[in-house]
Image 1 (cartoon, one colour):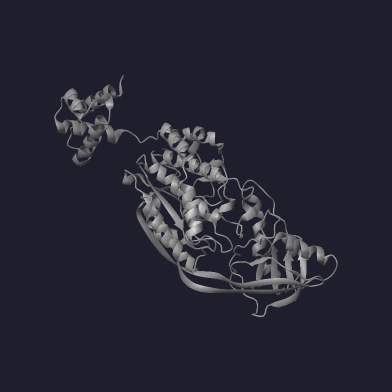
Image 2 (spheres, one colour):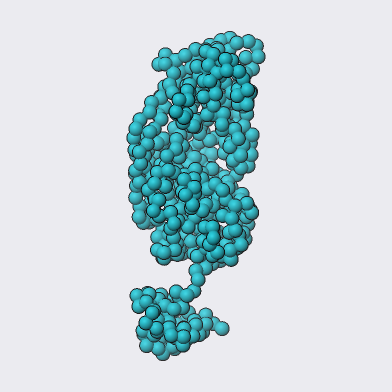
Length: 512
């Protein structure tokens, strides 16, 4: 049976079962008629709408009513062939690279609360607009921002050396003239925690704990607690705290980051991260006898405004819900924030733009969150969109660089849904595994809405080399592999095209 004949058969059947009943919404019927006429004029049977009207030989209202019944009754279903075509198109498209290059070149480092953050905000609005997104807008929120000042450190004895270091976010300053003290070295955070309470009075504590390189984020997840251990040092009488950079590299570039804000009454001391070789140097030197370090760290805190920027690819069905994706616009200050997280913004923007060419059923909202590094944008997004959470179908954030995605995680039970079964075959040519474990973490900026009930997905990137450069001066465009960036875009595009053109629901208790 031809496509034309099949449609005629469905329309005739609809008419014979009271398709012209007064319950048919006439507005929907008019819209359905326009869609049907457009469809036939586009080439069903190679003929135009006049052929359609002559063949069926029905009054216009009857055709409209039948079309309404046919189209409204048909369930939404994604087309795997279309998703595959877009996936392959992404592998030859340079839009993401262009976005990434633009943000890192035209804005550069952009910590929340800095003047560059406002430049980044305006860049985001302009870029969304230039790429044809709709509903482009800025969401301001209050922010207490920690900003870096002058920093220096050196070993003054027994063997003088300049040290490579970066202050840790939320660290207090040293006195303007700095401080000088002997260093107490611990090879792990566990060793520091096991030390007696009076072990480090008047000293600078150094935890020189290596990080394990892993493909996923767990090496970092297990090691990063050492960055926030200043209260442990302070409890043992220390005047400052140094930590080996949370890094898989062996170069001297120190890795910054934020320490967890201390709770009420918790004392913290000035804190900085040392480059890996410099931390090792102090440990080696301490084996020969006492080591004395001079440390000077300046910073200030401002009450300011941060901004999240977003834009939509509008869906054809406003009732079908919104898919929320994106990356974070802010970055740390040593580098230009290429892998953390200009690449995430570039990946999700291009993927959404490619899916726009198929006029998706669901709206795709790309979000540039404004304060991930020092926190706040996720909670602000929840507060601003609390009334809309039920309309968010699923959310995901790209925030682990731009190296190849190796696995896709969806909410529990998703792989059994008919519309999502093709996804496994769609991502397989990209060497991406369909992970059976459900997605538990979709990204820092969507933790708050996930906690409030929004389902999440995770396209897990290979982090094997990410923590060589993360939060350092080396986080620049030079370390992004254009081919791996395109693989990310292709994966996101296939997933978005599939979900945006289906009626799949991911919330507990829903069967579609």
